[in-house]
Image 1 (cartoon, one colour):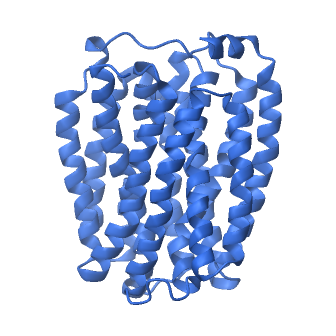
Image 2 (image 1 turned 180 degrees about the horizontal axis):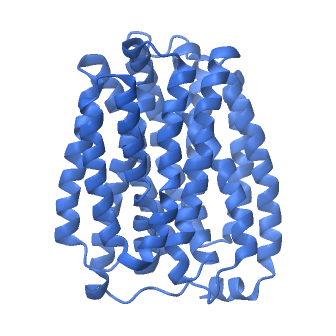
Amino acid sequence: MFTRESKTILFVTGLSHFAIHYSMLVFPAVRLVLREEFGAELDILGWVGGLAGFMFGLGAIPAGWLESKLGGRSLLLICQCGMALAGLTAFLAQNLLQLTVALFLLGLSASIYHPAGLTLISKRIRKMSRALGYHGIAGSMGLAAGWVVAAWLATHFSWRIAYGLVVLFFSVLAVITTMLVPSRRRSAPEIEATSPTETRLHPLVVYYVIVILVGLSFYGLNYLPVHFSEHSGGILRNIDGVFRSGLLTTFVFVAGVVGQIVGGRMGDKYDRTKLLTLILFLNVPFLVTISYATGSWLLVSAICLGVTHFALQPVGNSLIAEFTRSPSRGLGYGVSFFLSFGAGSLAEPIGGFLAVHYGVEKLFLLLAVALTAALFLSIYLRRISSSDPVRNRVLRQ
């Protein structure tokens, strides 16, 4: 199914994707511990997390542009070295200001990854949706590990050790990338079967608006540990509060692996705009239920959301490849991840404000409204895409 080079690229990008999302999830996983250590309320910490998330998105635009100049391998190495440096800065932080600077650097370095990694996959692996599904599984496992590992370390040792692992991860990954990933000059020819001759701006712009709304829901999930700590009832009541909320959140992100598998496999077989509409439709009722549920029903609803939410990723990432020509692919992914992680990071301060003044459960109602709007936009996207002769030719190939 995959060539030897494809397997190597998928292995290295998968490990990197795991480590990126682990790193970005350390802060929300230990948010309650940092509140006690630095004496900062959730709304202030929401702005700190929002800054990291904004940089995670903002840097993706220049990174996407640089991909056409430097290539995905070089960008991947820059990302890995930057992440190791940012992790060390966070490990050594002695106050909230220093930690904020560290998270700024962490988000900026992490922003390079998705334009680099996704472009490598879309250009060098023929079974793109399936490869993106496997790649997404690695990211989901990183999200799951971020919650449980960071929460466990913060409870039993120190939150700093969680950032120490970031330094270790990316130092090793930089060595692996240097040794295993071939440069563009030594790699096999690029895969062009899904690449249009011209970037299709109309459907691409509509999809980008959907990306913003989906990004809000992704960042909103960062408040699941707070929600679980307040409303999970007697589930795992014998476990420490911070670790318990992190563990329950881990269940949600592990469930996301199922969504990645389903989305990746279906994305290679069926119309992706139809799949996008279906998956968005399934997300909304689970967000509403999470807002009102407590105890076991809260956990079940959140796990179901994990499946449906993460099924979006391989489908959406494949759509970008379908809408952009090859030389613009990196920039297309860069803009997408700026909108998703940059604009979507507004959910961090919004969630902090709602948690302090109205209750964190209100955030999930707001996210349900956002994805309802995304659902209607996806119906419009399907209509304007279905009559495109270029797209129909691509799908037949």
